[in-house]
Length: 200
Image (cartoon, rainbow, N blue to C red; front, side, top):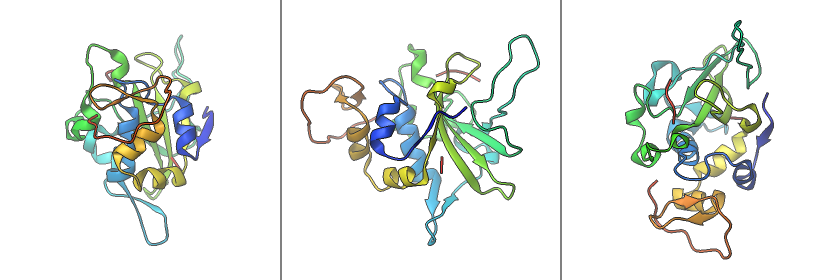
């Protein structure tokens, strides 16, 4: 089940989600916070698109235990609500994600292992947001699954991508991306561009 809730950028960084490059999770979460959701006048999150329509590669996440010899254990609460996931760069519609999310090293399977999972209320409103990663082509890693708070989404939304990446990644690579490696000194943010098949 969900290990923890991420409320601050520092917690997102410490979680290891989307790190190191060529993983795309940090950029995926940034896109989700900036472009896929919005906030109304009451400070509540509103969806700008409907996950069930499949835009940007969204598709149902079944969150089930398969009744076979090799069961899949749910990583998020087993409630009678709809879950959807996004982040599989091979899913239909994922070509509509921005280039900075889709840019990846296809020689490295880790570059497409990160996902954002959303849970909807019965009326279709956003209820929870989670981030996770695949442990193998079929399963997600329960120890690497986190709920993302509304406050963290708002914090991400209010930053430029450079500011965001500089706070959740440790070291810039030579092409302006970021690597999760030890850093001896802090550099000012610079411009940057930024796996497998199949938040509040």
